[in-house]
Image (cartoon, rainbow, N blue to C red; front, side, top):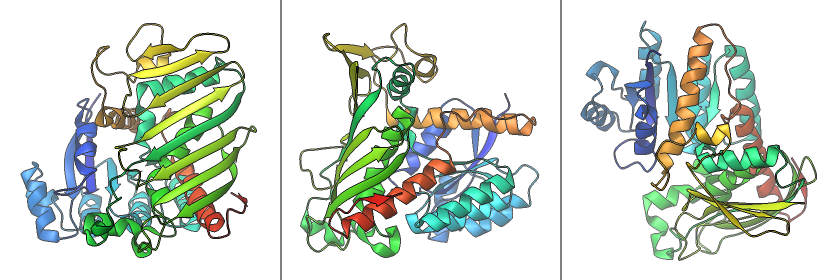
Length: 377
């Protein structure tokens, strides 16, 4: 398999997410990091790109320069990752799709449901892949959990509880820290802060594992630090397409919590529990039986788990490896497109999933502003 030229927008020096994308994309030797517009400060972005090994002519000052430069090349990038602030995702993703590039966009996909629906149309018209980086779905045991639910190991799913709660924004004195402030700025993030930042990861995990969509929800949103315009804590009740009851908690003020992403699924004949901070174990409790620990990398797991497991049993699995599974599947799909074949994107979060999340964000904001009124998506 020939390598794919890959480009990154955002993710510059000091970025939280940039290193994870660079590690993930190059993990399997499937991509060449070929082009980048890594910083909103043009000269800083150019300099950092060259430090990372980009040719000077392909270390761009901004995304528009990169779009023009790569569009004019015969060896242009085949996949562009958008890892910029939320309010730029729509414009950049739309422009690159329309120019014939495949795109992996960081979440949230857009700022509004109207923009998200527009991107669905643009992606379909372009014939290119538009994926959204719900990278936690790349963990091997999350995929095994989905396979167990699909094959009926726990019976009909009655309830799912999911959470993403951390304490890293709990200090009110951090209000003017630019790395924190932008996350609660409506101009930068839209109508929701904590739910749009972390809560939608938890919600998407619920939809991915159960293979159901969220149909309606009720939200209680609060600003535990009163100076914040947008919420830093939310509790969301939701109902899914096959009748499953959902509960979700997300917070950035949960002191003592670190990453705090986890999911529990309760069925008629069994229950499952997984947390991202201990990703090597999936806890399975059959009705009337004892709790079992399923280890990543052990024999007898699902094909989805086997092909997503990269290190031998007992060794730590990390976030870049989970992201790497998304990149690997995108590489296979891009090669299929080039060969005129229909790509297999069954486990890749696509633009439609991203649009569902944007609808959920809007619904949470409406419900939260109306004392928890139930809202249809």
